[in-house]
Image: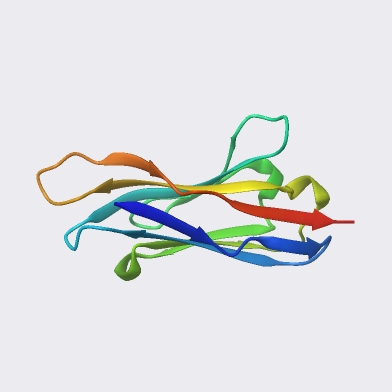
Amino acid sequence: VQLQASGGGLVQAGGSLRLSCAASGSARLSVNGMGWYRQAPGKQRELVATITSIGSTNYADSVKGRFTISRDNAKNTVYLQMNSLDVEDTAVYYCNAGIRERIGLPYRGYWGQGTQVTVSS
């Protein structure tokens, strides 16, 4: 089982980016909660947004109104639409998900490899 993140890059302040993260591995895997975290240089990793299997969302105060988390359960993929980006959003963004390889096994937490988002002024 692995999580593959993509979509990072360099953007000017005020611009937008869309991150994606797909879970893959077992053909019978199922995914519970999913989320995005970020870590800026010299800072601890922090929560950005989470989404449950039925679509309930939660956001860090710093991104409310600018970022939108969504998911496609058929594709086991979570997205993060980031608008009105600010230089303070510069960080490595990591996806996280609770995944079980098949029914009967417990859910385990997995992390994606991280994708760099750089916002220039």
